[in-house]
Image 1 (tube, rainbow, N blue to C red):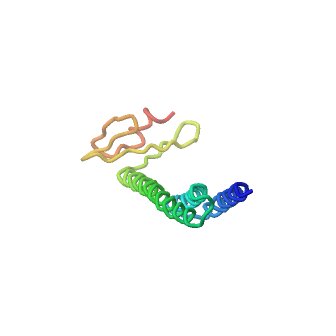
Image 2 (image 1 turned 120 degrees about the vertical axis):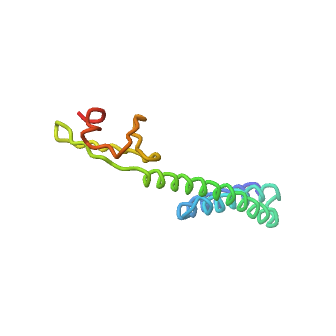
Image 3 (image 1 turned 90 degrees about the horizontal axis):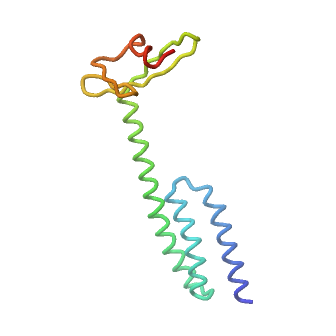
Length: 137
């Protein structure tokens, strides 16, 4: 009978963790919450349902979950910074096509010139007329 109570408690804890994890703003917060829930469950099983095992498991799981989630947050932030830097070092040139549509070409600043999407180098900001034979139609 005691095994059924422990199993029911574990299921309840995991369901509650899942519900509350949806409201977390960062992966670090979500990781801490999920880790606490899983750690509490494992601690309850290992400790035979005693409160000490549950609390220790929750603390260890929460700490580990936060560390993993926080590293994911740092990686995501670094990717956003790199994306913003790439956009700041580039210019957009609109090409008006023969069918009335517009194609946008991003050229990236490189030293004293610009590099096009296919790797071609321009010693100045290329004009629509220069890009149209390559990227327009």
